[in-house]
Image (tube, rainbow, N blue to C red; front, top):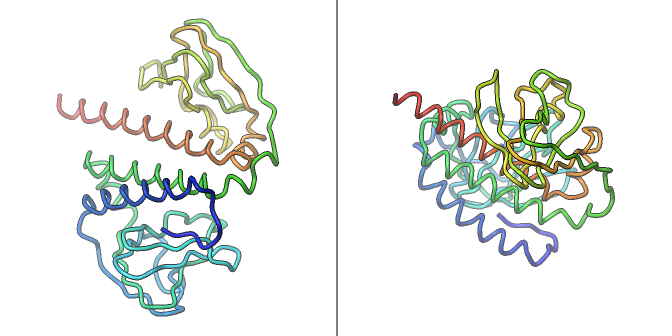
Length: 262
């Protein structure tokens, strides 16, 4: 991956880490569903399905946002991770022919869940990619918005959030330890520094799990209306959120594997 504009010095180290994760991911990816050649100035989404991930085999692929090149994907990089409605990126294109391997996204996700090695490589790649974007764009928005946060304290056994309740805040565990329960069944833990309660707040849905303090805890609560502003002002927050989600996914995968083997 390359950026065309001037970047903070720390971005070089992040890009180096991303390159290492990209190589590891390429080594574990299965055989692609197919290969295409994107011709010069041809738009990827104008000719191909958005329900796929595309891995650059050769050439350089430009990611376009607001009618400008945001960054450049090189061999091993994955295109199609930012599909959304409305789209984060308008499209991908190149000045020269680019060879792309493609994977059906749903099928690849299923393969990832069935392969611990691929799951780890995929998670580490996404975390490294998030780290690159956080450092690349944090200077543009830092200090623009500082959301108001409150600090709450809980003793062992206290319910921090309750399954089924409306989500008003996003939380960060500043000190202590807590367990996560679904239907009174323990499914995971929250460690110091982890963000939790974000999914329900961002999706405006009810809490899908309870979080209970297992010892004295100090929690920072940010109102859900201000959490988006927190990410905008401090993009590194999204990296912490991804790390927390990745740990949760790995824990659930381990529990599922243990049940399957019993």
